[in-house]
Image 1 (cartoon, rainbow, N blue to C red):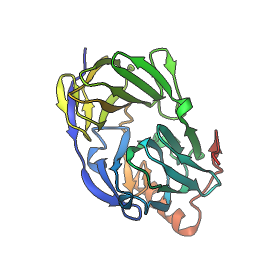
Image 2: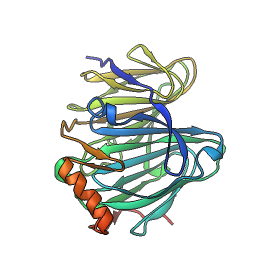
Image 3: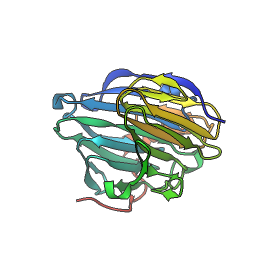
Image 4: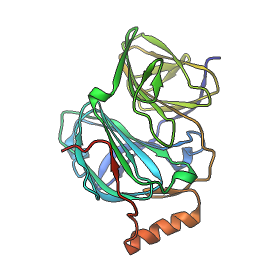
Amino acid sequence: MDRKVLQKVTGYSTQDGAGVKLVRVLGHSTVKGFDPFLMLDSFDSRNPEDYIAGFPRHPHRGIETITYMSTGELVHKDSLGNSGVIRDGQVQWMTAGSGIMHEEMPQPVDRMLGVQVWLNLPAKDKMVPPAYHSIEADRIIDVPVEGGKVRVISGRYGEHEAFRGQYIDAHFYSIQLEAGAELKLEVPEGHSAYLFTLLGDALVSGELIEEKTAVSTSDGVTLTVAASKEPIELLYLSAPRLDEEVAWGGPIVMANQTDLKQAFVDLRTGNFIQDEIVADEKMN
């Protein structure tokens, strides 16, 4: 059975960090509908003044952040010594776990186009040791398809297996199709599946979805997507639902209000960082 569109979300323009202009597509109001993906911020600007103020040092706990840069450059560093640069087609996958402080500073480029996604951690894994994973372009699997390609950032696509998260079986693809090209995706059993039209209008199960729109889908084993009248870049996200309580305050997401309050107490008292970070690759 082919999946259908359940919900469409276009988000709203806002500012975050030190004044970065962005579109917040997923947030507090979409937690249940897009579980376990909590937040999706979309960046698309040709004016560096929209984003060069960046995201100065700030905390995270209880989530994983996934930053995908279709085009652009982002310098980052964290409180435990990791630093690096995300460029065109690269991904920063950070497990905040029990707590990390970091900063992200976009650099002036012709066009900054990408997203940051927050992936919830299960209640039992909220306080795991932090970890950082650099997914550079050569670690992303490009699978040719008729009229385009699928870039497998995480999870599995057919026989191709990319980076696998330790706590959530999240599949993340960048689907790039020429105008009029169509692709039928097989959705892993037990996964909820979501899409975001990063660039161009797409057809999802025959329904027109405008650029910069997130959609959730019904149950089913396949999902048909296509480019409309122009080439597209479509982001695919799937994972098993958690169906757990979410206690969300700013950059911290815990399983209940007690743990959320404790996180802010830890932040005020200097006890926020509890474990050493684990890095599979440090970028210089």
